[in-house]
Length: 447
Figure 1 (cartoon, rainbow, N blue to C red):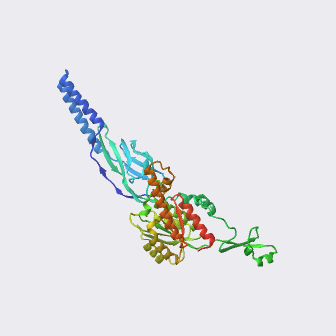
Figure 2 (spheres, rainbow, N blue to C red):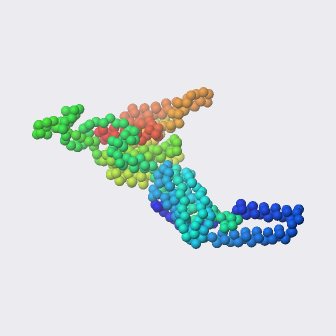
Figure 3 (cartoon, rainbow, N blue to C red):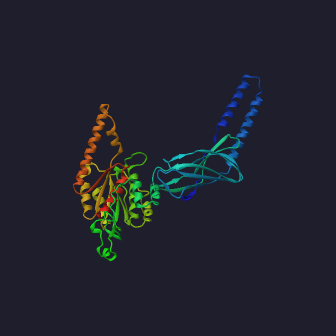
């Protein structure tokens, strides 16, 4: 279901003695000791050796002749990072039965519950097992077949076999919040994220409709011609301008390799950006994606709620790299690619050494676009400042954290003096901060 098979993996390991065979051999050795020190005939020991050898050879022959079952893996069409899903392995055995231990060769680093499992295969029957799997990274991955530990009929031997087909899967950003928001209005979705924007009734930049005057409407809203025609106060109602453009500008350099909790800063930034994109698309705006620093990616602004699929497919395998981000090059590239004025939401991690380059890059973008810089702050820095300094080492650590934040703040102030909105937030605060800033720009008609 959804995964692409890439061919059969006929792999068999060497047959190895089982614990049962070792125990039998130890018993045979004990019988030899009894022949030496007790009144037992030597023929008994020799006969036991022949029986043991014949049984072991016959059992080994039966193990090698045992046909591996056909294995089919059932998993969802799409997986999301951090979301646990159920995987089913179906083993179809023909005319043979047998005892196996099953382990699925899922991508390394993922979290699994319920493996390995012992299974008694029944002839002419489909046998199945289920386990839970949680992807811990985005991108393209491969299930390298299914590993079976097969026991021989007499339990004297065991053999490892890799069966089934290798399958490629794609892991996307966590789109569960987008699914929940699909059933909500834009206002409800905004509240769900935690963004707080002051509502303004009846004001905006695009005319929406005429309606009866309400207490609190300004005189500028009154349509005097309509009022004279119907002989009661009529107000114009406006809505936020539609068909504007938003560009998510994501840093894929080394700064975004920082990690707070399970997910890294880049994964959390991508999730937050997709939330803003979904809301903007529902508001009638077009959303694009520009990634630079490590990996580069460009998606021109697209319209419609279905465009979120375009953004998901374009970004699911995007990863940060351990390289320094060239802010000037990123700004120059975006100016060349995005000609129409747009709201640029630039997510990065500003440090004091970035001041000159980032400031020049923002000035370049400001000639045409409205720029908002979201500077991610490591949550561990806040935690350090909140801990009591009981030792000299604690005091030095707290002092270093305070100096680091002071230098960051100075870099932020340099941007703010150039009329750049700077959001100094942790990764947990980022989704609400981006949504709140986007809606504030829309309500103020700044685009």
